Length: 418
Length: 161
Image (cartoon, each protein chain N blue to C red):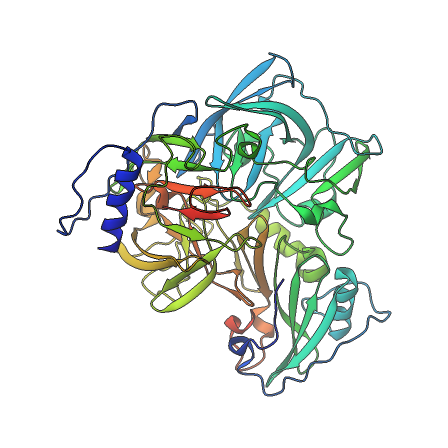
């Protein structure tokens, strides 16, 4: 019931003056989210197999980059829309224009190493005027993914494989529109002698040393640099029953800044500004360090030790097609409660199906019931399982991601709302 | 960033909670998982951290608070062997330092391609001699590693947290 009410009020809010009867109290499981399709603050999203034809539950859009102050531009499609990271990253092999290189105070070029789960990106920091939909972010620092100009330091890879090519990234780049503004933040304003460093200056192609990087120099969520509609994004994708070949929706810029991005009565979930996470409770147990992430391609939750009905898929030399996902014998339904740091809470109902069965389809790329184990997250004080609400969560929910410190009609970011 | 003191969930099985601060001393420069207590000191120096110790029934937890917001907890058996490591922080810590001689096995497992489709989710390495799990997202990662055959009798893997 709570879910139904929230959906109804969200529909009214997003439709503006539109009147929809929602007060009857009759139960319904139908989800209907209104998707904005017009406006300067709207960019289309498609969920498909991506430019490398190897993606499941990947949401892609197009980004135009221009040499700053010029009309020399290139539009790059197949950019993964990722609310789990911040900043624009483009694989160098798809770039056909030469963007200016960022320099450290020493005059040496700056390169960056960013850790993702199970991979890293490496390459020079360059600057572009960025256009997405009708919005423009001038002079945006971004990362060009390449290991040809500069060799990645061993501290960068840290045992992970690179995600520097279209094939191993599964995308032409990443559009990070998460709740952080910069990808690193204040910790990168000084070199971390005992910790991980993201930014390097390179005195030669094979010699890069950690360097301090001001907030203004850091790779940044380009939305934060838009002159307007710059306080966050809304990802709008329709509900999916089971699986589908493709799905289209919208990436809407700004929260409460235009008639097409009002919060309406979406529930706002405050998140911890340091760990960018909230709490999800399942069967009475709180799982801290949980998060909503369009760049995760399934519901990554709990583990089979907690939910015996969710065995891991096989991972053997002859059978690893769905390794890392769940393979229940029949589709399992779940109910969990998200809790914001602001006290807001809301129930989420979802299902997880057998991933090996899902992946037998040669045409489907949209899987609303794809899940896998999370095992570990950054809990309040210990390492424990968490809920990673990946892209399937977005199907049928308009999800708002407010940028840290940004002002919105629902209060300052960071928060998620849906 | 992370306050460990008074965490009853984590400490409830501890029979002794006397914590002491250990100053950095000259130590061997390498190894941790599978190493001895001296290797914990090496990690402490590498992380430039502050270390506290708490004792449980059959093991001792050495917690290193790094200067860059990373917390590492190393689980040392009563025989003095590091059988498990848990950590959390904004970024993945230096795995070569923490995994020591197990790093190459870990890196090989990471390189092994599984599945025809891209998977963007937690790292799950589950080999007979090494388990490594890493989760989270940029600015908030967490993980743990342990050697199943080194767990002291009666200690469950989930205790490594």
